[in-house]
Image 1 (cartoon, rainbow, N blue to C red):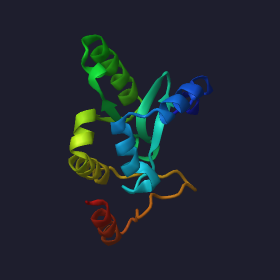
Image 2: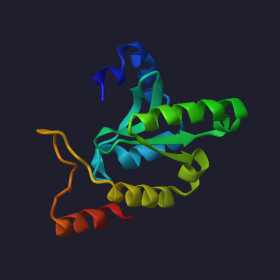
Image 3: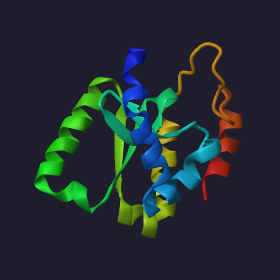
Length: 150
């Protein structure tokens, strides 16, 4: 992938603005994703091309989008669809959750994410740190899974 697509300087201020003004759902999910709590490093308000995604895990090519009420208007659904096609064309998997799912059922969201992440085999770049707790040894990964389950 071309590195000139990621975290462009032209949207740096907007990314910073969004990070400092997260919604309640974004803040709640970020509190559970940060510091590799699920064994993977996530970035928030990460830009890919002209889009800024809510959360991105580059090492597993995973994007998490949180949809609030504005996403359900027909014109925004079309934009979301175009955005998702663009991201998937680059090889990303896009998972969507609603604000309400996160606020009222965070445990199920985390269980779903954990299940999906465990199905993804990360391919760290040479010299990159492996996710906390990741090991090619399946017995050691079992301990990581138990810690991540709530």
